[in-house]
Length: 575
Image (cartoon, rainbow, N blue to C red; front, side):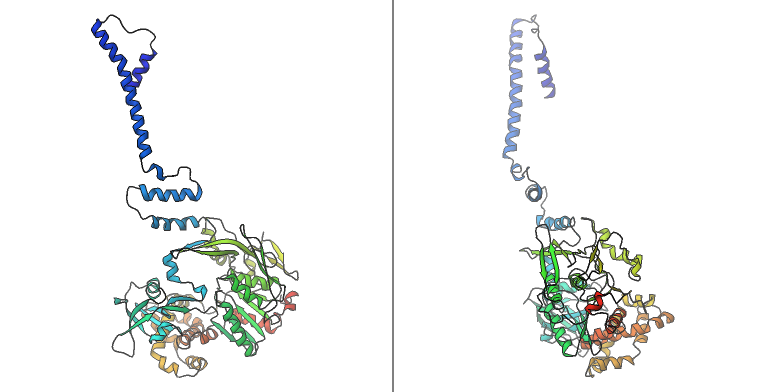
């Protein structure tokens, strides 16, 4: 076509007539050709263009893509185009599931997408329950060993007991090196009222025993420990803020007050947060009417102030709040409100620094979007959210490691306060914003007894594994005692550490006598706590496990020295 076009251009460009010295017939014939040939070629080109346009008009693909689409419509159009026109068959739903996390990753570090599969696996423990069979387990010698059976749960109802080991799940062999905690969760948890067949090996039976367990809502405790440290000081451990936390918390308060409690230690160490409402209700127990608890504000969410209503039951009790680098979100709301109102003494180390509020949007398929919608601020105006870059979680995820490397867990002076905005509590005490809650009284991490031998044994899981094995061999003896305190006293006289050392040696951890002696007290305390938990549950675990805890001892010292009263805090007499 290109040469033909050039021909016509050339002919049309000439201003003189064609040669006339040709015979007449030939000349006439040539003239006709010269007249019709350009016309034929022109018609061919026009027909080609028409056919091309017609094909484009009737091509079904053309109408599928909205070329003017932008933003979210453009993404929707692309997936639709792939679904209808891509050369191979693809699962667009899978593509969408894979694309969503990438999109969300461009936001803040706490906005996240949870697939329907993961939602079903984890359940909603913040709502105070999950659907499963109601056991605590551990992987031991390539089998699933039942460590504890949750009271009132479906496994207790059918007769499963601690020490049972799973052999088959729904007639499929469930032992061997391929086991993982994730695999166990996927098989034991499931929809409420669904059934699962479990075949177990019990030490007292030669034959395998089969149970059919109907999955049900299993309660999740968020206040696992509350006990008296002496005759006047009560301790409450809160692990997360869920829908049942407030009820558990006021139940713990009532129990401790009935035992003579006058001062409280609320332990929020390693509490990663949860429902803001639960933190607000807990905070309300300690503040006077009109004291601000928190306020939230976001682009689409106007400022909302939350104040105490004066109905709290502990408004005048001395209070110490324990925090560390793992205390985040709702934990920081509670600690920040106590600090800014000069109501409680904050003891420990700088908190995590999460001041973003998420809302969960659940889709019909069971998946969910956890989206940041606002920032919360403590009463003094602090937003304690630490710095982050949208779409780049590298530095954010490494923050705690960087704090450790700077020595921040061991020395308050290692904390960088430069360029942090300064605020003031209700009495005028200076506090810093934008980077977590800074403790009023710094307590370094407790390293007593921690050395390379201890870390190898603890990190390998051998301590818990051995404690479980010891419990199984001695369960009948330990259960004879009327209380966990009597059982713990008995265990004090047992050479638990020596047994552990021999057990660890069979697992490839060589004996190191000097380091073992350094860690002996810590190892014995923790072994005793694990054994007591296996038989008596959480009630005895925390009092034993934490009896030498450095931060609790410091909190007790401050309370006894009258440093945790509201007046003392305002006067900064604790410094």
